[in-house]
Image (cartoon, rainbow, N blue to C red):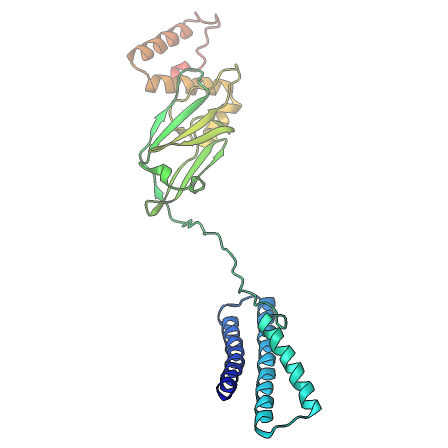
Length: 282
């Protein structure tokens, strides 16, 4: 009997001590990990509840020790012991306490690094396309470019420009921006295509007044935006500039053909007016 009594006393002591250790650990977790106010309140409330249970167990242990030493058989003490016994059973079965609430963690999506500094993309190939083709193309060689997320590659289009940005590729950010394009483009039909080792920019052409797509001489225009605006407002100036461009960039055969046209124009053989339409300026 003595050995059994000692075992019961040790068990009671360990149980009350465990409750205190549980409360200590919950308070430590609350201070270290809890961020939200509601979570802290739940954890603090739980710790207080467990400490009350521990105190009740301590009173039970004290009461039982006093009964064994003094042989007290008081009805009030017996009633308190019964209440404490019920409380112990509730603690053991988990009915007298709230379930611990784990600290809440909010998943934060990774932030895409977008430095304001870019390395300029200087090497690319330009394809003006064939006659009446709906697009012109820019080819940029970038080995292993498809290894980065697609959202890291962006291209903004306006009627007169495009702006390609590449973020977090091979330890840096890259950019290719071209303004004052040779001809206006259609942003809605313009797009980029990402392949394994290159990016292709497709610029949608705009149809001219005769229903065909404009022919491009180069990627960007040699004229300023103001000059281009004047040309659009003056059809004869537009024709003159076009012929000048053709003469300057053409081969010997093209120059010969334009020269013959100029001669016929001076002699009035083209429209019978004798007017040279300013072709002497070429």
